Length: 300
Picture: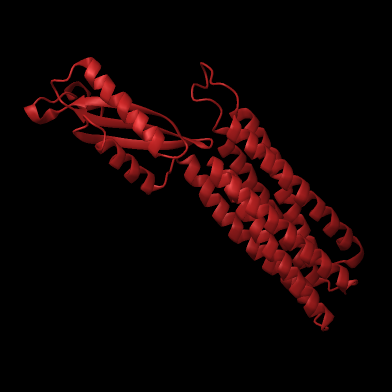
């Protein structure tokens, strides 16, 4: 609950910051006619609105498990990631359409000084929000929040592109503004690819292989563990769960084997950041020639 509360706080703070930046830019778009700034404004608005599905996901994640949802509601965060990716895609389509329309029907951009100021405001607002989201996302283990932070960081650089477009227009290059709008679309697509990859990996239960290496090292160092079988991990929300098979002495009693399994889980919880629980299964040492899993062979 503490990590979810911190994630919610990060969302509300970033929503306020990006909301203010979006309003400022929208006002400048209204009287300047800059399509590049329009693309940046749409991108910022989409980035700000991603706080809504993430907020719902964090709220759901705080609910207790039920007999139907036995692992709780942490997966709602992965669904929020899908919504975020869809929102980024929609903003790229809107920005591209506006830029192509302006290329087909050229129009002068007025109040270039205001466009430049709005671009600088967009860069500053996005960079501050990006640093905050990424820092909190790494702290609480939220891939969706980290992806949202990376999205905001790229938004900041697209704001600088708007500044370059304003400079080109000031020098008399009439097509500078829509061309920058198309470049912003390409930048949005780059963020879309990165965010989609992160969300896809979560949906497919991918974890950093270094975590598996660290878990195996920790298990082997546990007294009573003679070897290892499968070691698996998955993210549920911004917490990890693990399933591990350890090999123990075939002559160990049920109580001794259980003690080794509990010690192994305890060691894992302390060694692996964000690990909430681990199911550790103790297998007897098969070196005596007995296959203790023979009844399951056909099922595996």
